[in-house]
Structures are given as C-alpha cells and as structure tokens.
Amino acid sequence: MRSGHLSSRNSQPYNADMSVGQRRWLAISGLMILSLVVVSLAIGKGAVAAAISDLTCWIALLAAVAVTFSNALRSRGRERSFWGLYVLGCAMWAVNQAGWTYYEVIARKTLPDPFAGDIILFLHCVPFMAALAMRPHRRHDGEELDFSTVNFFMLLIWWVFLYAFIVVPDEYVQLNSGVYSANYDRLYLTESVFFLGALAITLTRIKGSWRRLYLHLFLAGLLYTAASMAINTGIRLGRYYSGSLFDVPFLASICWMVWAFMLPCEEPDSRPQPQSSRWLTWSQRLAMLAILSLPPMAFWAVFGLSAPASIRSFRLLLCLATMLILGACVFARQIAMDGKLIRLLKSSRESFENLERLQSQLVQKEKLASLGEVIAGAAHDINHPLAEVVESCDSLAANENLQADQAATARKIGQQARRTQYLISDLLSFAQQAQSEKAQVDLTAVLQRAIQLDSLRLQSHNIRVITHFEPGLPALIGNTNQLFQSFVHIIGNAEDALTEVGGGELTISARRQGGEVVIQFSDTGRGIREPGRVFDPFYTTKPIGKGTGLGLSATYGVVQDHGGHISCYNGPEGGAVFVIRLPIAEVAVPA
Image 1 (cartoon, helix red, strand yellow):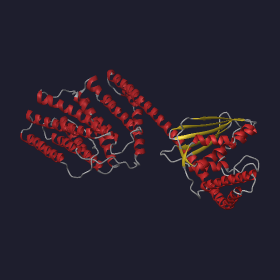
Image 2 (tube, helix red, strand yellow):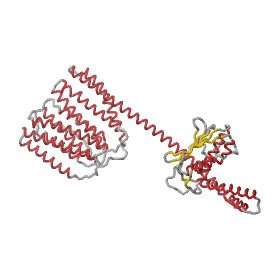
Image 3 (tube, helix red, strand yellow):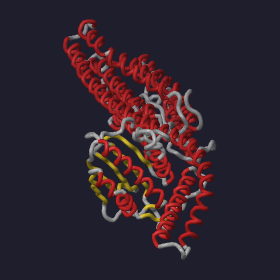
Image 4 (spheres, one colour):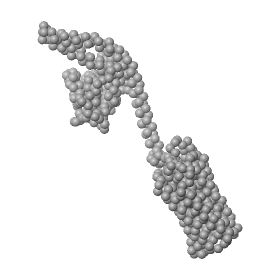
C-alpha cells in the first residue's frame, strides 16, 4: 500500500484554533490508529488483522475524498480546480485500497501479481502534481493563460510516459515480477520525492494560512513516503503482512492529511508575486528537458537494453507517441503565446499613441496658458476704452438731431463694438480669467449661422458648401458665441485654402456617435503643410498681415473648455480635415 500528498483550502477567514470537525476527526483518527496497534500486537497475522487494517485505511481515504469534495463545492476559480484534482487523486487512491480490501477481506485471496491497482496507485500522484501547479494561494487573472500550468501538464504526461516506459513492459508486455516490482518501487519513490521537493519549494515562497496548510501536507507526505519505503522493504524481506505495525504510520499519514484538508485558508494573495517569472522559467526548462529526454530514451530502448524484441518495440512506439503528444502541446502553447504577444503589442501601440496624444495636449495647454496671460492683459486694457465707445455710440444714436443714415451708422458702430466686447469676454474666458456662461446649445443652428455669415464671400470665391446634418441632433452644453466663433475660424481657414486653388468644395457634417456629437469640416484644397502644428499659437502659413495664427489656438481652447477634443489631418484624397468631438448634454439646461 502506498499514498499521496498536498492540498489547499477554499477562501474562509483564517483561524488558528481547530474547528469542531478537526477535533472530531482527531479523535476518530486516534481511535483507528490505537485499534490497529492493539490488533497488530494482540492478534498478529490473520484475517481479522488484515480486515481491520484494510477497512480503517479505506475509511480514512473515503474521508479524504469527502472532505476534498466538500472543499471543491465551497471554492471557486483555481481553488475549485485545485480541490477537484485532489478529489480525483484521493478517489484513485481509494480505488486502489478497495482492491486490497476486496482480495484480502472479501475474496480471502492474496493480491495477484501484477496487480492492476498498482497503475492507479502510481497515477494518483499525477492529479496532486497538477493541483500544485494551480497555485491556488495566488490570485490569477481569469483572462490570462497561465503558461506554467501548460508546462506542468506536459510534465505530468512525461510522468505517465515514464511509468509506461519503465514498469509496464515487465508488468504486461512480458511478465517479470522481480524486475517489475523493483522498478515500480524505485520509480514510485522518485515520484514521491520529486513531489515533496516541489512542495518544499512552494513552502518557501508563501506565507500565512496557506503555508501552514502546505507544511502539514508536506509532513504528512514525508511520513507516508517513509511508511511506503518501510512497507516495500518488509515485502522484500518477507516480514510484511496486512495488519502489521508497518501499516500504523501509513494510516497515520492518511489521517494527518485528512486533518490538513480541514484547515481554513485566507483569500488568495493579490499582492505582486516576484517569483512568478521564475516559476514560469523553471516550468519551461523542466518541460523542455522532458521533451529532450525522449530521443535518448528511444535510442536506449532500441540499442542500449538487452531486452526482448517485444519490449524494445513497445518502448520505441511509446516514445514516438509521447513525442507526438508533447509536440502538439508545444505547438498549442506557441500559438497561445503568439496570440498573447500580438495582444500585448496592440495594447502597447495603443498606449504609446495615447501617450503621444496626451503629451501633445499637455504641450498645447502650456502654450495656450502662456498665450492666455498675454491675451488677458491686452483684453483688460482694450475693454475699458471699448466700453466708452459703446456708451458714446448709444448716446449718439439716441440723439434726435441726427439724420436717419447717421443714426443707423452710429447703431452699427455700437453693434460692432458690442460684438468686440463679446469677443474680449470670450478671450478672457479662454485665458481662464473669466468663467464663460454655458447653456443648452442647438448645434445645427449654430453651424448654419456660421455658414450664412460667410455665404456671400464663399460664393464669390467659387466655393460650394455641402452640409450633412443628422436630423434630431441632441443638445450640447456650451457657450453659443464661443462655438460660433470657433466654427467661423475653421470655415475661414478652409475658404483661404480653397481660394488659393481657385475654388472647390467644403463639406460640413454633424452626427451623433455614442455619447458625443462629431462635427467634421473637410475641404478639397492642397491640405496643411504641418497638421501637428496648426493649433500652436502664432503659427500661420498666410502672408504677413493676413493672419495672426491665433484663431485655431483659440478654437482649441474653446473645445477643451467644453470637454471635447479637436484634431486635424490631411485627407487621403487631399485637403484638410478638422474633426471636433463634443459631449452630449446629460441633463436639460435652459437655453
């Protein structure tokens, strides 16, 4: 009889005191172990001792299956997978013990040689190894493929191959009991030591209740391995029989393991794990060594062993089949890694583009902030004499002695002066010296007004305006005058560009896109020489005296003040394209 190891617990609050279930199991375990000791010393070899030993060990293994199954039901994610693998391993172990119990207690026969349960006993450690690779003590991203798990899955396949390569030929291909038993004992011991080593390494990398759980499982596994070695030695020396004192540490190790399964564990650690990359590196190296070991073993099976031809052929075919399986695993892992790499590159490219965009916006804001300081000072100085002009024009227009045309001229001067006051107010708002008043804005009406303002001049320069306004555009929250002036600036730039080429088309569209309204201005001119600089203060390609280079800078500031975004680029067929995105009003604001 032999045994397995390891475990972890679902996410419950950690408590160092033993639970009621643990205390009860401790009492039951003590009673079973004491009974086995008394029977071994008092009765000795016989059917009664064998029945008590086999049944108590089988009951202990059934308890392990029940506890791990209960843990799996209460867990989730990788913890549930961990406990599910432990249910499988303990169930395989219990099936092997059931075979012993059937032959020795019910059928009253000695175990056949070879015993089919030996294969199940050896393979029951495989789910335990897979459970260890799950690392339930760490919090994992459900969307991210854990390649270390794939690597360990390849190692588990290698362990199955190793058993079939070393043990199965002398067990089933051509029976040789002496060689088969010796090879089985050595390989099983190697498997147990390898697993205990992996568990010990895991112990050094975790803390808290999970470490306490792994520590108890490691000690229970160590006791089981020692008991298994003692039983195998007793079998070779002819001193072992079911119900002997050899079975006492074996039963104790199972009971200890069941008690460990009942330990509560805290939530998986969500802190960064510096060992994660090292874990992945070592799992990759071990998987690589497993694959590289297959050709030498195939060569050794054919040319290095003095074995019958049937055994050599079996081992050679086994190596070839395992190569195909592991090769398919490597191919699947590579496809998954390529897909992950493509996703990472795409994410990196998007992050880089967002970073560039953010940097450009920050630089632009710094430029506009510097410009705002200059504008604020100039606007304050202009505003006072302009107020005098408005007042004088109003007084002059109210004079009854003026002729009709003189009064109309005075009123026009006053109107233009007031418009200039509005512009200065907007400049102060743009310079963040005054808070602009925002209300509900009918964007379609503002765009049509901006087009009508320059319609005569556009027609005189042979420029045709094409509009595509989505019906029922939602309202925006903004400053009507600021948005109007911004649209006028963009239309004016398009007019200048099209005038240089003798006319053309200016297309203006407005549509809803998600939670934004997208306004696009595109012309059929020559395009912009440096689209990335059009919003820089004082940048202009016009002759001296025809442009200051502040119009688009002010437009940029207005769009930013409205929580939107403006961009400029050259269209694929030539011409400049300006795109403005403004957020839709979420609440109704008085117009």
